[in-house]
Image 1 (tube, rainbow, N blue to C red):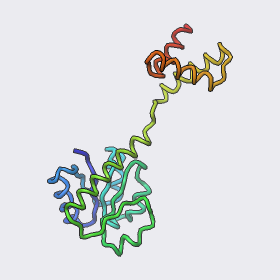
Image 2: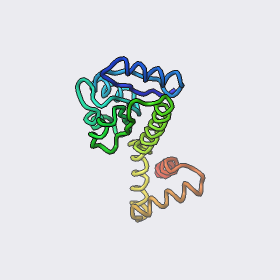
Image 3: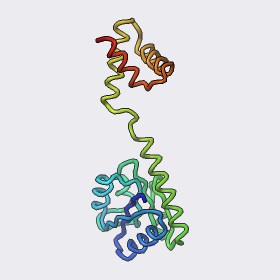
Image 4: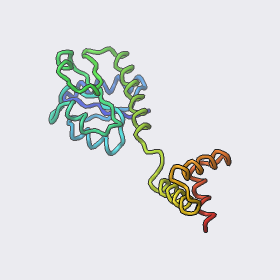
Amino acid sequence: MEQVIVAFENTKSASRIKEILETSGTASCILCKTADQVRRTANKLHITAVICGFKLADQSAEALAGDLPSSCAVLVLASQNLLDLLQNDDLFQLPAPVSKGDLTASVRMLLQMGRRLERALRPRRSPEELEVIQQAKALLMDRNGMTEEQAHRFLQKSSMDNGTKLLQTAQMVLDSAE
């Protein structure tokens, strides 16, 4: 079960939301009372979803959202008149009081958005892998008088023809030079 942070000044509200989400099997919850706790926990555990009230003890939900990693989605649960005050369009909003079904459906959607954001923001290759590919392209450019674009295309075509990954093809080019 994925983890979410539930952050409210009112411990009773946080506990109730935690109970609903955990008994429904939607998510495992970590309770926080302050924005500082949320920031530390989200960064340490790579949490992708935060459910919070309009304001925490030390900061508003809007300010908190700006401090969280871009892969972390925020759902603000508050009365409609407070939600109308929010200016950040990236915050998900759910007017209180809320039904169990609406809460669990919203949190499931939030988790799905968080997973998609995390995948989109995750680098596809490590710096080490990029360096191997760059070295192979440099070698091809030096030896064969290719442009960088031609060297990259050569690596791509060779990897497709051989059924290997681009990184493996780049490594084979470097190995053949030795």
